[in-house]
Image (cartoon, rainbow, N blue to C red):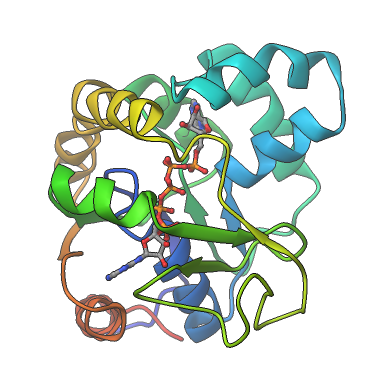
Length: 219
Ligand code: AP5
């Protein structure tokens, strides 16, 4: 079988491990990881006019308007070299965004990481992220070596502003209504790969890598 380069999107409920598994996959397949949420939060920090529109949506856990997200992502994707493959985490989040993305680049794999809502709430209320390099930890499941300090770069660890229970529940409701239909969209295009995200991190990763290898993608 001819080996293909991975041109993947990762989706699933909030807390399913998109960011965590995305980092591991990007290393294994030697491709860039593009995190939509991180890009939107960077846009907000840059105090640009688009960032000002995004702020209230992102902080409250609502999906930001398609036109704004598509514009920010298009601007930032243009600056990256996608010719050797990539993993997109958190974009698209609805069928309209998937159609828009198909106009920009070809997606040959859509990984759906599945977990229950109860597990999502448990994970996100304990999440810590490095303010500098964006590495992800969990207060109990993936603790840093030194409390409050990133084990990767030594930066400060902090909870995300939208990781409060009210915003998490809103994000999960939005996922079921808006994002879950992506499974049918990518199944129709023979690109869907479903993975049980409730296993411990290394098991999720190995399960996913085995399934990806069977599909003929090269690392
Ligand atoms: P975004 O930053 O993408 O957040 P999200 O979708 O809410 O997803 P999360 O980052 O919360 O979860 P994750 O699946 O990456 O989990 P993680 O690996 O960190 O988006 C934020 C906001 O931006 C959205 O709410 C929206 O407003 C806006 N936005 C973004 N994209 C958009 C778009 N396309 N259109 C419109 N709006 C958009 O893991 C979570 C925790 O669990 C961590 O602590 C981790 O250590 C732990 N963990 C991970 N895996 C496991 C495991 N297997 N077992 C135990 N613990 C685990």
